[in-house]
Length: 99
Image (cartoon, rainbow, N blue to C red; front, top):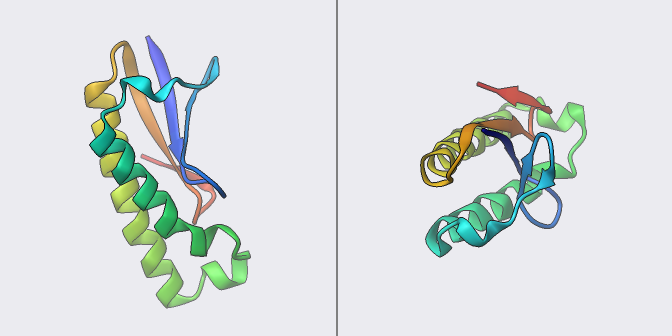
């Protein structure tokens, strides 16, 4: 059973196997990959911000919305990938895992 982590990143979204590193994305449908790319693109304005900027109300709300999308995408990945026990979601905005 594999355990994966989904997170936003500077250039492209990251899906890592906890034990083996980056996974092969060939098994992910094109539509879901497009949704992941769109979500990661929307996250880019947050990735470069420092802690003070991330705590501002408007930015915190944006992070919450992006994290909600990210959790839905993590669930979608878990439902389509074989031999996956869990896809954990790492919030780039909060710099922590979100259950």
